[in-house]
Amino acid sequence: MSDQVEKETPKFDWVAARSPCSLPNVFKELRLQVKEDVKTRNALRPNNSPYEFSVVENSGDFYGSSSSQGCAQVNNIQPRRARNCSAG
Image (cartoon, rainbow, N blue to C red):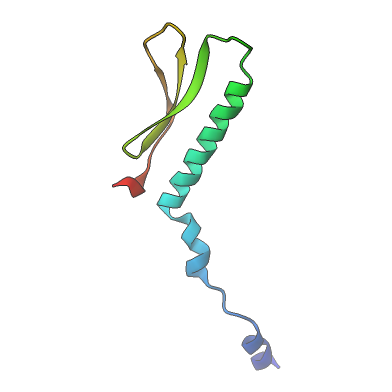
């Protein structure tokens, strides 16, 4: 009976199951979560607020930032910065 159960049970494909856990996929998911966080935070700003949050992407890097109207300086939010290992 044990042989019959073993033949009917499909083998677990652990390679395919672990594929979404690769570094490029993890950073892609992180980037999407940061974009959603920024979108949510901007929706919570008061009307006509002088500041805005954004996601800056450059050569595989991305990070959240904030800026104010009339202010040339962009304040980078460093703890959310991550390096996309798939970019090079």
